[in-house]
Each structure stands twice: as structure tokens, then as C-alpha cells.
Amino acid sequence: MYTNQPGHLKSFDYRGLHRYSLTFCTDYRQRVFVDAKVVALVQQQILRAAAQNHFAVIAHCFMPDHLHLLIEGLQDDSDCLRFIKLAKQYSGFHFSQLRGRKLWQRYGFEHVLHDDELTLVVAGYVLQNPVRGGLANDVRDYPFIGSGTYSIEELLDAVADVRST
Image (cartoon, rainbow, N blue to C red; front, top):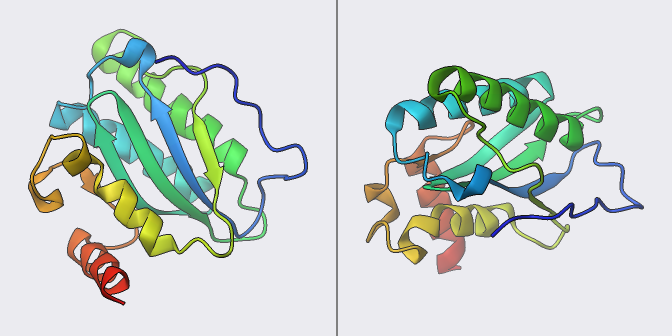
């Protein structure tokens, strides 16, 4: 699967206190996120871009050939398009230094969460990807999920609380 230029919402400026579900696919769907060293390197650069652009990484899940992120702007000047650009640029550069090849497809998928979409429901969806993909029986068994904001146990407990209500 290759992504075409998806186009951004014309009436939305991607700045401010908004939440986003993002998916970035690796170049030619290479299975690079099976190596803990690569995942740690890319995660570090994603968190770097998030901090610089005032975003919280609420949940992330590195699947073998793509990455799911749930992020939230923390300030009025939080710029999602700039975050995406820098996250892919930083991580792509460091991956290239390590592996000598391109990391990301040019475009990805983005979804601006509506007010009625609960953050923890979307976080649960992100974290359940390895189970749905047959990579783990329980999310706690999958090594490449997490959050830049919460411990994985805090996040999973919060998600479970939302599901039980």
C-alpha cells in the first residue's frame, strides 16, 4: 500500500489545542520496526519533534512497517503540520545514518479528532493494533507501544476504565 498525497483539510489550519491520529508508513512498507534499536531511535526523534512543537504523544504503536501516533497540541501555537514534517525529517535522518536508506513514505494519514471522540477510546484503538494484527495476544506483550506522557500501565488502566463505563 502506498499513500498518495492525501491533501489537508482546507478549512482547518492545524494549529492549537487539537488532537490528531496519525499514521506514517515506511518506505516501500519495509519491516524496520522489528528492531528495538531502530524503534528507540525513531521514538526519540518523534518525542524531540513533539517537544519542540508543543505536542503530547498520548499513545504510539510501532507496527513492523508503519507507526500510529495519537498526539495533542498543548499550546495555541502547536502546529501539527510542522510536527509531522520535523518528526519525519528528524527520524528519517537518523535512520538513514544508521541503515543507509530512506525511512518514510512521503505522505501519511491524519485524522483530526472531533470533540465527541474520546481521547482514551482512540488511544485504546492505537494500542490494540498489535493484537488486531496478530503480533501479540495482549498489548502488554508487545514491546513497541507506549506514550510520551503516561506509563503504559497508566494508559492501559485509563483505557480499561473508559471501556467499562
